[in-house]
Image (cartoon, rainbow, N blue to C red; front, top):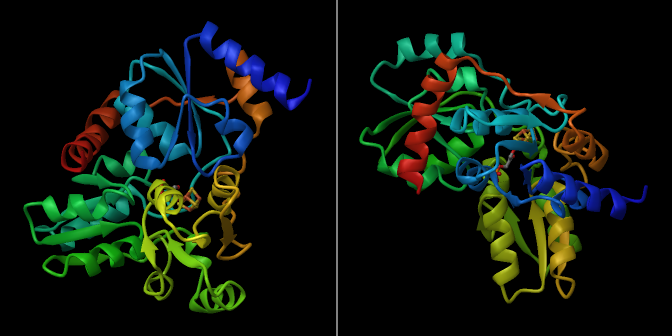
Length: 305
Ligand code: 13P
Ligand code: SF4
């Protein structure tokens, strides 16, 4: 079977079986072409809840599939490839944060959505990269404990100097690889290009950026800009998708190291097996986890919408 034929089968089967396919923008193009919705973490969590289908296949990483299950516990939620985790989401556990909360009892605990369902149960509100500044600014408490990404947390703190933001030492190992040295090297190669970066990058990278935003915000900015060349400081697939969508412009990844192997774990064959009902992993969460984790996701949607 060719890739095209497999895509056609997936499109046919998902209709027949009432399946919704969600794909994060970091996954491969041939998967995105079969998806009902593509977007950043925030868009996917909102879309997951409104999707009318009974089954959702998440082409992304485990915390994203868990978020869908928390929002739609009545749906069958399949993670397209069970090995696709997020190292950042697994950096901190419930026990650690419960302990830290005892040291900072009057702080509101803000969790990046890139956390496990279990960890969300001990947090007050979730944020995504696109909604973090807006949501933290609306929280009726100046004292914020921001977990787990200290780079995103530092970015939020810089935007909201009136808040006292306590950070822990976590983050995305892919975005955190980028240094000012990479920025200098990329700018030397492409002196006319604008630098667009994700706030998961280190402050030394973010401070050099012409634009800072989530995956979708970076894509929208690049598409609408009159500039013709861009250095893209986020997962490498964003430069690839943009190049595909805007052939008249030029997109250069900030570094060839910007590859998330977990986001690349899902193949079109995995997705095909899922729609056939013989692949992926069904996400199961107990009722109490769903109930408690949902509170901070609902708060995110309320404050971020
Ligand atoms: P966004 O989808 O919020 O841009 O986050 C990027 C990311 O690293 C997802 O895992
Ligand atoms: Fe996790 Fe970073 Fe990969 Fe996103 S890019 S899934 S935060 S490791």
